[in-house]
Image (cartoon, rainbow, N blue to C red; front, side):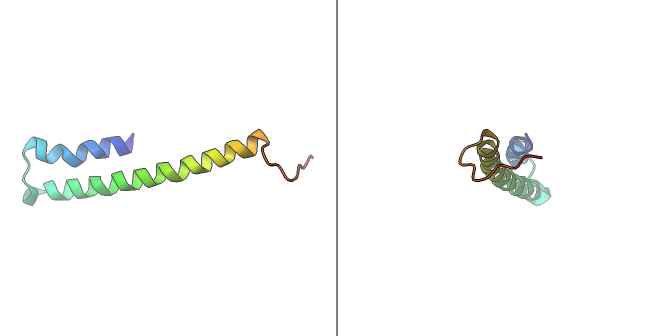
Length: 67
């Protein structure tokens, strides 16, 4: 959600007619940084979630502990 909103904010200054020198470049740059960060977070957490699903499903289990 934040990644999608940041993507919108990246183009918002130019759509509203805000000049780059008046802060348009700053808003776009920060939004670009948030988009890149969001994409990296999505990729990392997706791989972690797939690994957790494998662990919880019991695939390739080497050992089982019971208490």
